[in-house]
Length: 130
Image (cartoon, rainbow, N blue to C red; front, side):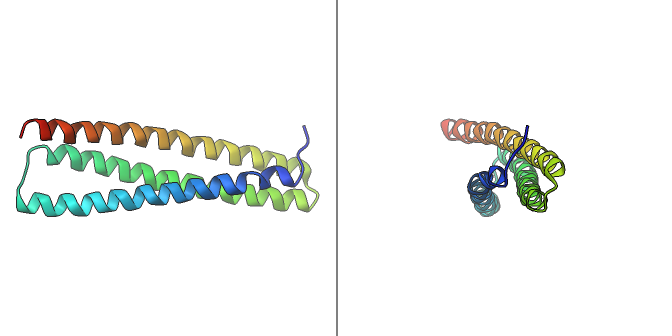
């Protein structure tokens, strides 16, 4: 199989939008952590420990999602450079690794979504008991 210079270029908009979405998730988590800190100081609740555990794991996942996404983007650009320089075989391999990194990033995103949903369920159960 042979790819052209435009093949990796097709991933540019997708990876850029994905990184933007990851950044928005990070900012939302940061806001939640700040709000939780204030609420816990004002009126401690037993469910807060579960929320803290969830937020810590989500924060770690988002960091890893961003790192893997940036790595995928870097490899995509490197692939384009290699293809531009006439190193088709290396460019194709690097592009393949870029796609694998993107898949890993998306899998972590899915895992973060599952944790996020569990955290919301915890919050809802806390509200039901009030």
